Image (spheres, rainbow, N blue to C red):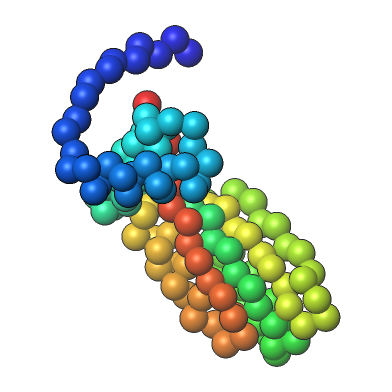
Length: 137
C-alpha cells in the first residue's frame, strides 16, 4: 500500500513534551511520530467500540483453575451459545492448577463485552482481560 504521509506540527507545553519524550523512549518507540500514531489508533479503536460497532475484534485472556468443577464445560457452553464469532481459542497449561486461555473473537462490541464479563465472572476464573481491537483504513 502506498500511503501518503502528511507532516503537521503541534504545540505542547514543555512539561507535556518532556513527558511524551520520556514515555516514547521508555516504551521503545523510534520517534515521537510513531508514538503519536499509536495513541491516535488507540483512540480510534476506543471510539469504534463506544459506537457499538458490529465489526470489532477482541482477545479475551483468562487464567483459571482447571480443577474447578465443571468450569471447562461452562467455558465451552458459553462460547457455543454466544452471538459472537469465536475465531480461535488457544489453551496452555501454566502449572498443575492453572490454565491460560486466549479467545479471539469478532462481532458486535456490546456482545463481545457481555461475553467477556460472563466468562470473567465464572467461579474459578482468576484473571480476565479483554483487549479491544478493530480494523483501520
